[in-house]
Length: 131
Image 1 (tube, rainbow, N blue to C red):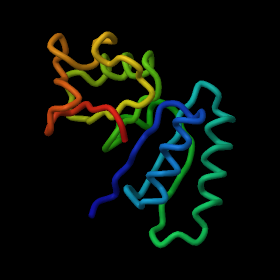
Image 2 (image 1 turned 90 degrees about the vertical axis):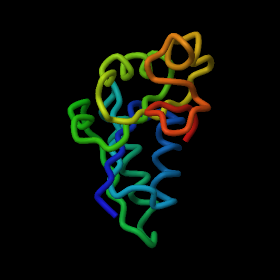
Image 3 (image 1 turned 180 degrees about the horizontal axis):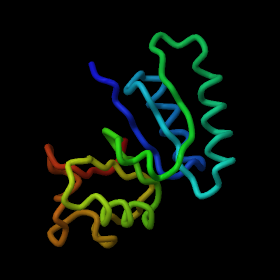
Image 4 (image 1 turned 180 degrees about the vertical axis):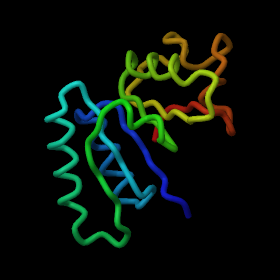
């Protein structure tokens, strides 16, 4: 298994819960929380790291900036506007996106017939809803 790196864009309740779930399950080796409030991302990363003291698989949880996305194996944008921005940035790349907290992905242009990214229900696509 490689050194999978997941970057979560948004360190609020949803983003931090996604990070915690990924870390608890040992789904990756590295999780980076990015937020417009760096101190919030740092605090959430520290809390999650502390909670993993006795976990079976070591997972590095830390905070960082948007530059972390360049080396990410998976990017998780939280909320509609962040998902739309991430889609625009990653369109034409191989970096997969999993968006969370998007109420209507078709209306937001993230999925459906008008999207180059496919639909939420299509297996093998690069964008999906839910984590």
